[in-house]
Length: 67
Image 1 (tube, one colour):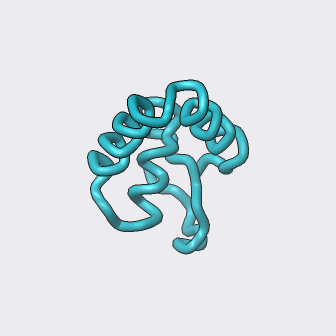
Image 2 (image 1 turned 90 degrees about the vertical axis):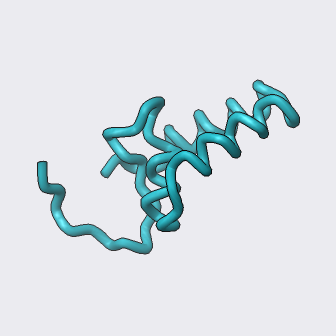
């Protein structure tokens, strides 16, 4: 499926992500592999805390427009 051209500098939430598409959107925006963001999110959940990182993740999912 082709998406309409959008500003590549704008951060979007990807529709084809595993869980709400936040990590996939960050990976697309930065050009880094999505696995790096998923590993970072997992490490942050275990070190900082599930509720803090989970709240930030859900807030990002609610605020970022889907692509």
